[in-house]
Each structure stands twice: as C-alpha cells, then as structure tokens.
Length: 352
Image (tube, rainbow, N blue to C red):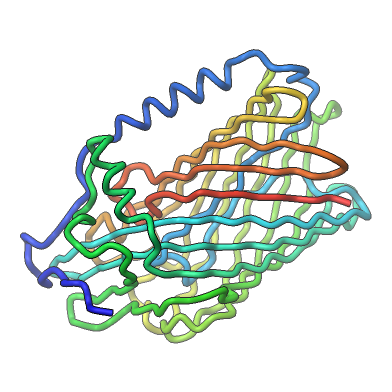
C-alpha cells in the first residue's frame, strides 16, 4: 500500500486544525429537546433504561484504562446479565509542529461482551472483554461530503487518499512513540469490576453506587508493554419529574508503557451527565455528554493534550422477558480534541 504523504516536521505551515463551527449541533440539540419534552405514556412509572453505552475511543488514549459509562443499578441478587455492544468509529487527526508529528487515519470497530452477576442486594461483580478491529475503512469520502454540506472543517482529510490506515506519533526528537499495526478481532483488554450500592431513597427514585474496575491489557500494540490500571467512580441516578438524570464521576491511574514514558500523565478524571425521557412504557430518548482530562503532556498542542469531550444521543428500549436494546450516535465536541470524530453504537442485553 503506498504511503500517505506526511506534513513536514517542525513546519509552522504544516500545522493543521479543524476549522469552522458546527451548526448541526444546535439542530440536533433542538430536535432532542423537542423529543424529550414530548408527552410520554406512563413516563413516571417507567424504570430508567439509560445511560447509553459510550467510552473514549481515541487511539492515542487506549494504551491505558479509558472510562466507559455504566448504570447505577446493580443486577438483582442471584441473577446474571449478559450484554454485547458494537461501536463503529472513524477518526482523522493530522498535525505537525516542532514538538511532534501526528498522523491518525483509521476506522475502528470495537465489540464488548460483559457478564454481570448479582452477588447480594445492591452488589454485583462482573467481567468485560473488549475486541478491536482496525483498518482504513470506507467512510472517508462520505464524511468529507457530509462536513462540506454542514460547512465545517475536514482537517485536511480531503487532501489524503481515502481508505488509508495510520496510527503514528513521532516526538520532536524523532523518536517514534506510536506506530500501531492494524488489528482484526484482537482481544484488547479484560476488565474486572465490582459495584456496590451505597445510598438509595425509599421510593427508588434516587440511587448512588460506587464501582471499581481493574483493566488487564491483553494485546501487543508496540508501545513496550501495556500495564494494568485501576479506575474508581461514583454512579448516580435521580428521577426528576418525568425525566431520569444519570451521572458518573471518577478517576483512573495511567501507568505508562515504555514508549509513552515522560509523555503520559499519571492519572485522569472523567465525568458523564445524561438526561433520559421515557417516550412510552418501553422506550426512552437519551442525550448525554462526557468529558475527561487530557492524557498526553509535553506537546503544547490541543490535538494531543486537550480534554476529549463527546456528545451522545440515541434511544434505548426493553422487550420480551429481560431484554434491553440501545442505538446511539457519538460526536466529538469541540472538533479539535483527541476524541473520535464519530461513533455509531448498537447494544443488546439479556438479564435472566
């Protein structure tokens, strides 16, 4: 495969940024606000279906634990829950300066399988396996046309061949920090977790839980060996009239593999706030925003060091005996951060 032309290192003219506002965001938010405010059937009586599954999918962050959303409720005592989630994302980041040369151009399909068990009232334990497939993908041309239609920047995406693959970061001294090969159904990591309910209202409209997660890396991504990391978080939900509010706040250790020593921070915080509106007895519309602290340091560049922030919106529903589904769209805001350009998500869960 022919190599993509790369920008000149240390060239001020070579530095690129995504430009332009995103008027589509205001349209999306207005549509969501209208949908969330619409009358619902038995809204107050419906148990919450959110939050939507989402997580930081940035390739330059996934060498340590990345936060993912979860519900505050634990699985009922003695019951199992098995869930799978697919996230298809596209990312293009090209930036050159005196401190670094960055080129990330790929599509990524992540598939997770999670098994939970209710150990005791308000207590669950579980394990999650994450599989990753990466490649050049097929959506580059579509995204360029879509961004042009919305009159937003393409970060020079249209100047490079479509369908290419690259995950490469070189520092200002010419040292290759990242050069990640393609992967096909590679087991990225295994996460072992436990959740404990710590406070709940008598009418079940408010709940607060704490959760601990240990990430055990299982792949060789060419960064000198990834290390085990730990995350702790608080998970909460509150019913407010016909709405359900979901919140997550936590922190994680960042243990640097060999090639990221000196440029990876030692810890990170993360937070999510979601609003759910039942649209009937079995379906909810959900919108949520997530943010996290930057993970890389020493480059002085937003494309690498800024806090990734994402907006997620979609729907979730229940059917049959113990089944739940969800569909979502995840978009980075603002666009000049390390977050993935967009992710389409589909999830299915069965409790028995």
